[in-house]
Amino acid sequence: MILRSVPTFQSWPLAFGELDEMRRGMARLFDSLVESSGLQMAGVYPALNLTEDAESVHVRAELPGVKADDLVITMENDTLTIAGEREMPVEDDDGVSYHRREREWGKFRRSLAIPVHVDPDHVEARYRDGILTVTLAKSPHARPKQIAVQAEA
Amino acid sequence: MTAKTMERTGKELEPRAKQELTGAETTRPGRTYSPTVDIFESDDAITVLADMPGVRVDGLSIDLHEDVLTIDGRVANDLEGKDERVLMREYETGGYHREFRVTNLIDREKIDASLRDGVLRLRLPKAEAARPRRIEVRSR
Image (cartoon, rainbow over all chains, first blue to last red; front, top):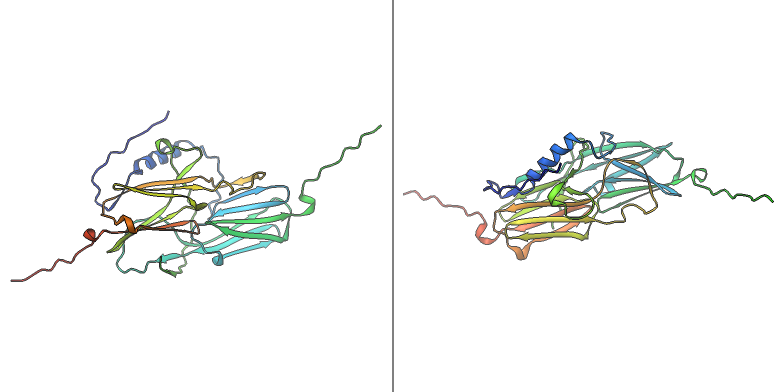
């Protein structure tokens, strides 16, 4: 069943009223009824995605507004640790008043055991458009090898 | 955009699931999320900060039509390589969409938007007529 609702516009007391509030409420209700995402949640910030291709393992995290200089990435044995801080901006103007304050800030530290043998000397980290990508080169023996099949006469 | 001073605190960040939009608003394929925002107002402007990781300038559209402000962002499709296989997924990627009603009069010619490190900063200067005026109280 798909439920749709058309938001009714009232006069809003704030300068910013939100049009999609009701839709989001519906989305939340739906999410609480159906666990459809299939996502794994570690309960530690930031959420990570882990992928592999033939040569490398890639770890990605959405870290909008974090400066590259504020990220500390370490590799110890097979454990990758991403630590840093998202700073709270202090606005220059005196006497600003907030209509909404949803963005969060603070320190974070997340460790992840990499399930594939990687070379700790070949780990690269890039930060672009708010997304951190750590690329870890696989150890030679963890890379796929094609085995030639000998034809026997 | 002026340089901002920053403040460090000992607070720890907690993970929060991205807020996915469902239903009528999603008019394109793929997932769409509601970006988290800060909105603040000073005497001369309203500023919106929105977290939109993965969005680049060419994927961003901002529209103020009558009194409805729409922020829409598409993420680049090269966030992951084509031959990558997923080992673990804790977050999904998708576009961003959010609408607000702006009741202040805005000077449309002077709206300024910048995108940096996945954060949109949108400054909506108030029209002259909408700025607060101090009302003198006269005694008699």
